[in-house]
Amino acid sequence: MSIFTIARLTFLEAQRRKLLWAVLLMGLAFLILYAVGFYFTYRDFSRQGATLPRQFFEMANVLLLMGLYVVNFLGIVLAVSISVDTIAGEITSGTIQTIVSKPLRRWQVVCGKWLGLAVMLSAFVILMCTALMAIVWFIARYMPPNAVQGTALIVLSGLVLLTLSILGGTRLATLANGVVVFMLYGLAFVAGWIEQIGAFVRNATAVDIGIFVSLLMPSEAMWKRAAYLMQPPFMRDLGITPFSSSSAPNDAMVAYTIGYIVLTLGVALHLFQRRDL
Image 1: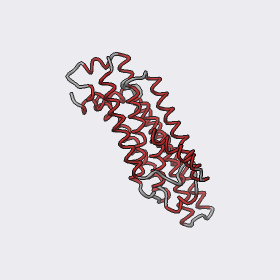
Image 2: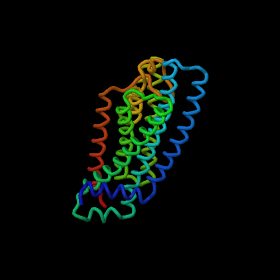
Image 3: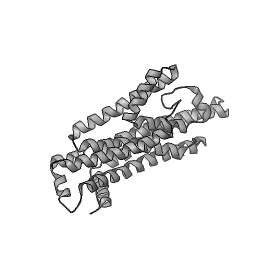
Image 4: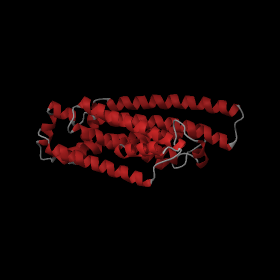
């Protein structure tokens, strides 16, 4: 039994619990609702004579970012939902003892579970982002800049929560783990807005607070980077909107986030290795 076997079994377990199918159905319902709303909004927009390229790009880009913002949130919810019980629940039920009693190292169990869930999460986010962009392209013939990079950053945002949830599961009960991870996400969300508002009003203290919290929890920073990259340059000069970013973390923050995920997974491996089962 190897890491890839554990990953495959983890994926199948999520299917058996029907959680994945429920999320897919919710995603499909969102795509249908979004397609209908975008079509009628675009039709009314065209009828009012707003056909200038700048006006068109503003409308299409804002509506697309609204949809991607929802996809980012759905990815966060999926990341926590599929991982919050994967280790904590098996420790509580005693199932984990059967797994680790086989000729399999504990680090292989954690890495295998993380890999299976990461593939599942990545596939969902990529599918949803691609479908949203296809809807916008089909109706309005608009494609945002840096679509691939933006999608990858949204995936990275979800992987932060997924890895933290895996880490929490090595020490916390399922409910406590879920509460802690969602509270950390909420903290990052609020800090992101504090940083944006601070940058807008030129308040250095607010900006520093936002940056500090982003270092502790970089998920929201990845969304801000994705939104910034997927805006046309002139859109970045319009100021803050609920679904976009007038400033963005740089490439160093992306590298930091990748290192953050690796380090968090390493800590999870260490804690699980030392835990008395």
